[in-house]
Length: 209
Image (cartoon, rainbow, N blue to C red; front, side):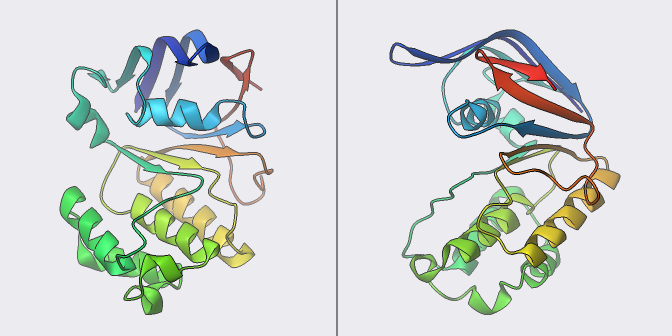
């Protein structure tokens, strides 16, 4: 896996959030640290094709702007504060992901069992607690086969047991050759997850710690 961002600029009105010449990473697990408002989520939304930007983003030489659908099929993005239609059930949401990503139902069942969400799948999402919603978003992120997982603040609102399961899942996927970009203003437990690089956004640029 190779992800390369060049000549990136992102503004909201007159406010520039990101502006840098180049940032690239190869296969591995990477942690983007820093507090709220530093541009982490904006960077992730650029890479996942969810917000317009100036510049070029390449994943394995696939150009996000020129081959958007192909590019997006290689990435899975879990937002920090997921928002889904409140009137649908968890199962209906997962069925949608299953169809779009051509996933195996058995793999989805294993994920819902892992995060102890199987019993709640027939409930409407509007009745979910913040922790349940977060676990559902993580399950959705791991549905299907992609090259790069982008997890924005995956540790917030989930309990310690679920965090442990998430660490193990990341390690398991990493052994299969998958790569991860994880943002967190909380410390990632180095004893449970070894990262290949740590970055922070300073002065609108992504720099290595």
